[in-house]
Length: 455
Image (cartoon, rainbow, N blue to C red):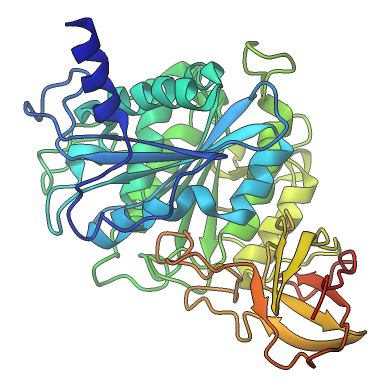
């Protein structure tokens, strides 16, 4: 009997084997990636563990060389079949991995298998089973990865649309576990909505007021465009912001001047913002408590304005102003709300582990924390012969090596770090190096040079 229970448990948490389209295509989760999957509950709606209405995948990336994790960054997709499917690649995002690695955090991405047009409140309200299932996955992934501390470390939560509802809801339910939360185009409901009576309002506990929060949305979501499908996003964000800020909550607003509901270039502000919050809040020793967010260097701004000033110089009501953690983030915020074109003076890390097999060159690389990766330059015998990819894409923002989907995750199949040199001269010994280029156009130092063993 005991053996049978173990077998059942293993089958339950194994990565999906017989999933249905479009959730049956996903990157392999080989170490340092790990995946668990849970079937939908047979008793949906009950607020008990395992009551989630939809099946769900959780994939986590563990940075190499980290003995004990300090936290976990959660990248939560939005509602609808396409957004849910996009969560299958969230943990493979090199730019978010750079943030996680810096702070010795894991990077986790859920993928709820919600049918198209089904009610996403069944998962994006964490009280409907996704809270309990998320915490269950942390324990199971902790066992699979050899990092049992996953079950207890703090959370940094990023969420888009319905994922913003989820991330905000998790903050309000577990403020002692959340280091910071970024809510892109979605916030929890704090008052009953006659148009959506099935959504139960949340309350803001006192402990949530000390957690750094950012409400981020596109200007076409009710700010500059006040009709259409997403016109209600700003009024919902404004109500949430005012309710939290009026009580002294550490909450800001960042309006993307270029977009509607798509994520655009938000990562170039979100990642530095998380960087500042995690540096200030993560426990100094494993297993310790979250630290209080410093407020003495804060800056303030009008929520829909373009200028931020030190809190001591703000002339309006500070409890109606957007809160920014420090001068550096305030400067980035001012550029973001102007045109999202954040500057960067840091070079990306050089590629490493460059190898050549026949005519195929392969390498590894880490993203630049500030600006990510746009493409790679291939140098042969001292001359640049190709870019990989030749034309980087991203129809939602800056062109980027991994491309991006609507919910800010890499496209499938994942872009490989390889180059086939079809112009190599037979019998000639070529010498190759690889150079990384970030999305600000800055080039890394060249990688070490490699030479084929034979030709």
